[in-house]
Length: 148
Image (tube, rainbow, N blue to C red):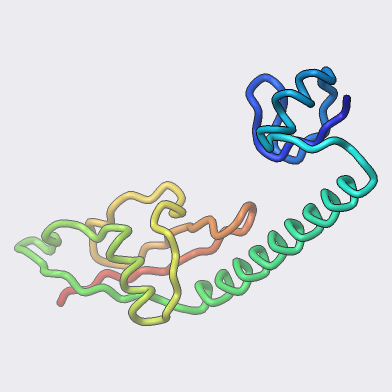
């Protein structure tokens, strides 16, 4: 019997996948436990509608990421920090500080875990930080660390 899985089922398949299982397994376990539905014209139409909806949502997320990428390319974050003797800074500039500054100054929210290869900044001057906003959409944040 062919069924459409409603949830991931171990050793059977993933959500929204059409799989062939025995009649007994489908009728006695998968369908009663709401893990699957039998493949019918109606269920296939519903599945296609859900897939179309997911594609629309993903496209909207990608467009939003592209918009944020354009914003990031046109801004520069300036962070002041204390300087010790010999021009070295006390501590370092963390990803959380950069995210907080972005939110405060430009009202842009980015997850600090999206930073690519980020290491805390521990010197004065300019640094460019790459951020993966969406699959394949990588923005760049310009950060200037100054005394103050």
